[in-house]
Amino acid sequence: EVQLVESGGGLVQPGGSLRLSCAASGFTFSSYEMNWVRQAPGKGLEWVSYITSSGSTIYYADSVKGRFTISRDNAKNSLFLQMNSLRAEDTALYYCARARGFTGLYDAWGQGILVTVSS
Amino acid sequence: EIVLTQSPGILTLSPGERATLSCRASQSVRSSYLAWYQQKPGQAPRLLIYGASSRATGIPDRFSGSGSGTDFTLTISRLEPEDFAVYHCQQYGYSPPFPFGPGTKVDVK
Image (cartoon, rainbow over all chains, first blue to last red; front, top):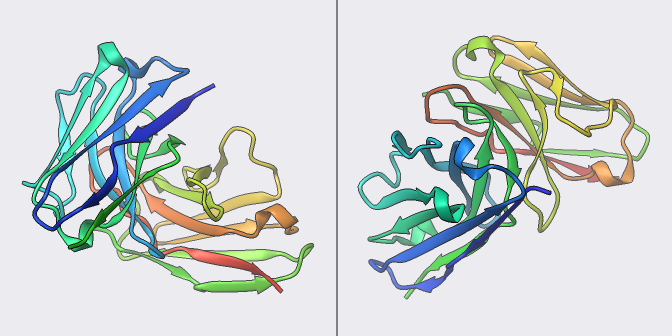
C-alpha cells in the first residue's frame, strides 16, 4: 500500500523556519517525481514545489521562490521542504504528493501537516 | 499562467440526483491535461479523473469527465451519500505551475 506521512509542522513566528518531512513507503520512491501542495484554512489547493525523481530538476511557485527549498533522500525514501522567512500567508495544511510521470498529476497524497505562522 | 474557475461554488442536491460541475480555463488546456480531485472533510484529495475524461483506478463509473480546450465538466450521474464533498479541477502537464480551481462543494439538500 502506498503511504506518504508528513511530519515537522507546527506553530512558528513570522520570519521563522520549519523543515517538513515526508516518509514514503509502499512504492519505489526513487522512481517518482514528488511535490508539495498546500491548502490554507477554508481555501483551495495551491501547488508549492516539484522535484524530479533524481532531484536534478526543481520548480517553485512564485509565492515561495527564494524562501522554500525542496529536497529528497532516495536512500531514505524521504522528501523534505525547508521553509524560511515564513509569513502569515504561509499558514496552511501542507501535503506531500506523488506525481505521475513528469507531470503535475497527483495519484497519491499524504494526510497533510499543519503549519501555522503567527506571533 | 492558466487560471481555472469553477462553478457553481456550492451545489445543493439530494442523493440520487445528477451533479454537473464546471471548470473553465483562462486559456486552452494543452492535450486535455485536466484532472478532477475529490476531497472530503479532514481528508486529503483523491484523484478521480485525468486527461479530462479518464477515470483513475477504483473510481466508480458514475463519475465521468468531459470537455476540451477551455471548458470541462465533471458529472456524477447519481449521487451516493459518500459523494458529498469538495471537487477541485487542476491543469497539469509537463511544466509548472500546476494550478487548481477554487473548488465546488457538493452539499446535501
